[in-house]
Length: 291
Ligand SMILES: [Zn+2]
Image (cartoon, rainbow, N blue to C red):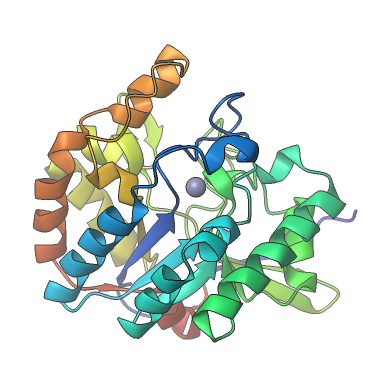
């Protein structure tokens, strides 16, 4: 496959902060024999109802809007949660169906997973979804086949690549960009990154957001926004639920990352929301122009 044209983008003035939520259960880890097997999922206790509503309540207090990436599996199990997110003003989007990494599926598997997820989420939402995020930042490079498939399937936006190795190539763009092939294109909006522990990290979510000094995260956000790069933050409902099952069978490193400082998150998140209003991806896309 020929490499695509990549056009770096930015907003004309300072960029907004963008909030994204990946709606998955506590057991939706990637690439793990026990928890990642969908045949077990219905036997695990579901905790998404409470945790997702808590998150939506936090957002409503400050008038924040988010892009909410649902797993297709969640949309079939709990379609009312998709409807509730839409009714409360958020942008519904697609996080794949079975939470498999994009680069661990064949092209046909990726397309099937994508199409099935989108149908389930759109059925529940009662509207079209045009944004996608792969599980665990698993579109590694702008030239990956997954982005070509997303373009063919009519997605306007993807938010799955990052310049943080080993999740993505170190030379991937830090800010948003357009990937075009044969006149058709898709906008890619990577997550906020910054420095921590002597290297580049995805500081807008996950364990770096929970562990690094808040001043460091705020500084990374300011740097992005001043350059015209939307500062994309990402949270999961299970991160607000430190009491979820302990997952003793997980490999130690994966378990340490999953549970790191969960009890800190609610207070950090409240302070984060108080520092400025968040918007959804759909709110920022029309304002992107070539850098
Ligand atoms: Zn995920």
